[in-house]
Image (cartoon, rainbow, N blue to C red; front, side, top):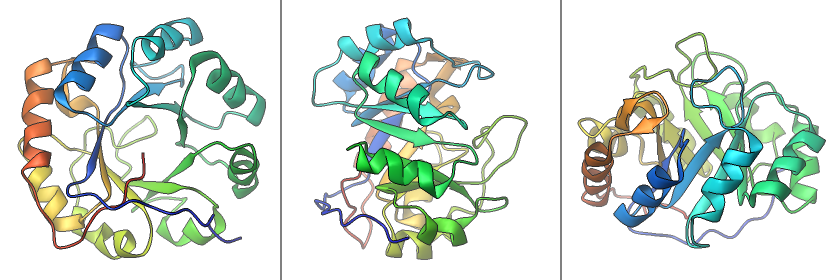
Length: 228
C-alpha cells in the first residue's frame, strides 16, 4: 500500500504542535505565540483527555489558521468521524495499533491522518510503507500510556526516516532541548505536550513562548515540509 501523493510546501523551520490542550485560553495562547497546531486527546485514560463538548469549545475559539488535531488510540472509523464533524478537526493522529485499512478509509474520506510509529516497539518505522498516511509522528515509547511519556531519546536515530517521509518528532521535548532535537533529526514538525506544562493538561505560557522561540531560531540543512 503506497502513501498518498501529497504535495508539501517547504518552510524555513519545523512546524510546531502543542498537544494535550484542555482549555480554550491555553489554545488561544498557543495560537497567539505562533504555534501552527494544537492537539486534543480523545483517549479517556490520558490526564489530558477532553470530551467532545470541551473539544468543540476549544476548536471554535481558534481561527482557521491553526490546525486542530484529534489524538486517538485504537478508535474506530465512526468514532473518529463523529469527533471530526462535531469539533471541526483538521487532522487526526492515530496513536495505537490502528490498521493500514483504517488509515486508508480515513484518507478516502478526505481526512488528513497522521500515524504514530515508534523507535522501540510496534508499529515501528519499518511499518511506514503499509500506511497511506499524510505524515508520521515518530517517538520512543517509555511509559504506561501511549506516547512518549516525557522520555528523552536518541532523536538522531529518526533522521534517515525524516529524509524519506514527512515526519513529526515527539517525545521528551522541552524548551531546553528542542533545538538539539531539531539539529539531530531534521523533522518537518515538532510535537510537545508535558514539556510545556504547569500541570498535566494545563500549559505554562512562558514555557510555550520559550519553546516556540527556540524552534523558530533553529535552522537545519533540510527545508521542512508543511505537514500540519
